[in-house]
Length: 254
Image (cartoon, rainbow, N blue to C red; front, side, top):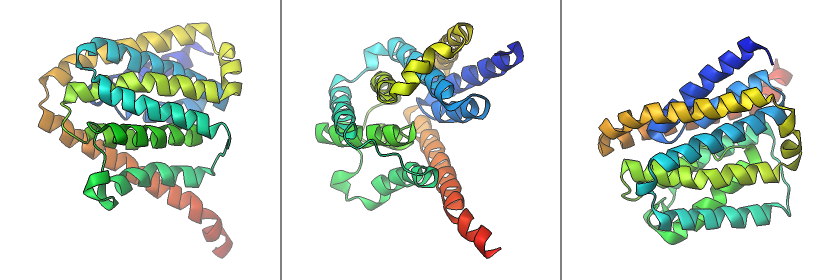
């Protein structure tokens, strides 16, 4: 890997870790797009998992006093169940369907479900259900998408509890993703060890720099901007997935 490519990836990792450090979301989804553009799939997925485990792990360490164990236990129970169930199916959807799944599920959870089933991080049964669904999405597409963010924004957790608890859960989710994609684990050693070290350092640095900004934000500001980010990302996924799904039809017509 050339020094210039390493520098570009380091800047991307620092920036996305900084974004995730503030809102606990979005950075990982942006980073996987960058990595897939410049690296082969196995190396991109392995490096993404390493950076996300480092970023989320350090974020959870910085805010460990704010981790809510009950929601975390419920969510991680759902992820483990999904991991066990999905090993029997090994289903991989097409890219257009994967994008539509990622984009539509948060909107469906927020606007179509009855109030009793809308995401609420303070309900144990919701944690199991959404943990299962989010882990299934991660095993299907490589990321859990904005649904996990919609889940943790539900209920009355304050901003630091949301960031800390979600980060704590995501360490396990990304580790299980590596385990599930066994071929990726075996190819992880082919990544430049220097790039691995840079990835971890940038993840820790970006997360640390974001701490003071999160401290200064109010819960109202946090929820407002987090919701805007989720809606923007979901909208992008829906548009891109719809375009890819309709592209063969458009080509045949033209």
